[in-house]
Length: 334
Ligand SMILES: [Zn+2]
Image 1: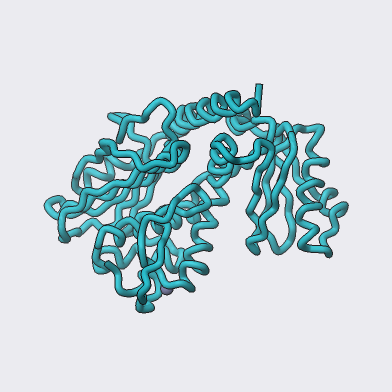
Image 2: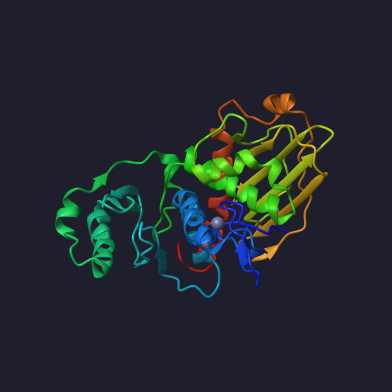
């Protein structure tokens, strides 16, 4: 167990805090203890998570809509830079992305039916205005950026609301690396093998020694999905014989990433996994298998260099079908 915060080195004190291996904003539940000090957990680490939540958090918000005990017409929209939560209700018919730029805040991206775009944006802006009286709603509406979305981006036009965003980039992989580090330290990993990764996560700068890639294997699946499973999967493998330490992170069974944490690993063998089903809210026991291989092999085998788009679309379609099915069951859509 860690005795000091892995980001800043501050000694960790009793009583142990409960912590999230995966960010709460994507459906992670507290499953670990004392990985980070309070200031890092609420500051830097939280900022890092925000980069991921901004990209895939909408999927979790859709999951919460189809689960029990959530009001059918409620959608909590929580993406302001200052942490302000904006709750948006209503029956929008999302079709096109609307980008709302608000100066010091992160841009807000919503989808709405073309004819409903401005009224929908106005509703959200009026919500925001409650906490920011100086916000000029009309002037902001004048500057709305609306554009036609490609068909592939329409998959969550569920009659309520949706966000969409691009996946990937430095912020995405920084947050994925943090998940990998959380998992590694949670399982008693030593700092010496992941020093480079910690520095990357801490400073936000890429380093060539740590490879991070989307991973959509075509040879064989990493695990078998149950018919209505929607899960997060984390798998950590450390193999001193082959000298590699790597972590696989799969979010919503859609976004799959592989992080090579160390290519000169001499620590103890590690083969641990975590799988959490977001719909059933249970931990799944299943066979998740990644092959052990040399770093050189990794470059060939692990790193998909071809276009992964078709595989991503298949994964998305599956996720969409499950959500549609559940939404129909709740009478949210016809
Ligand atoms: Zn700290």
